[in-house]
Amino acid sequence: MSTIFKRIIDREIPADVVYEDDQCLAFRDVSPQAPVHVLVIPKKEIASVDAIGDEDAALLGHIWLVIGKLARELGVADGGYRVVTNCGKLGGQSVDHLHFHLLGGRQLDWPPG
Image 1 (cartoon, one colour):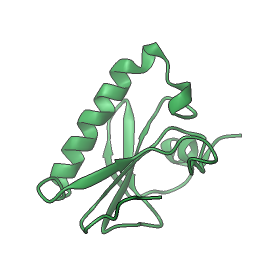
Image 2: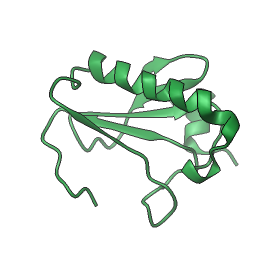
Image 3: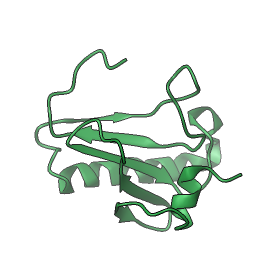
Image 4: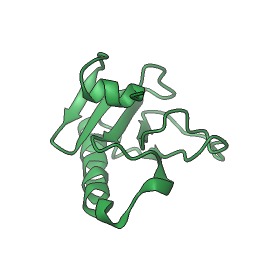
């Protein structure tokens, strides 16, 4: 069964897409936790941080470059932002597809969890 993120990639479920290329997709979170809350996901199905392989190094580097670009385009780079990746049930991961939360636009608390 496809994850919700795979279904978004395949356009089976609508999303407010803010960026897309051949390797990744970024869209606004439906339950935002900050004024800017975008999810950045690889189009390759990778279940979690624990499932990243050596062959994924270039893809992950690309995603981090996209995250920085989006932070600048969405106006949060100068004030600061946070990138969060949850791994596993106890880590708060609710979708078994690697994803990065880009959060900004307000003062973010610490510790986060």
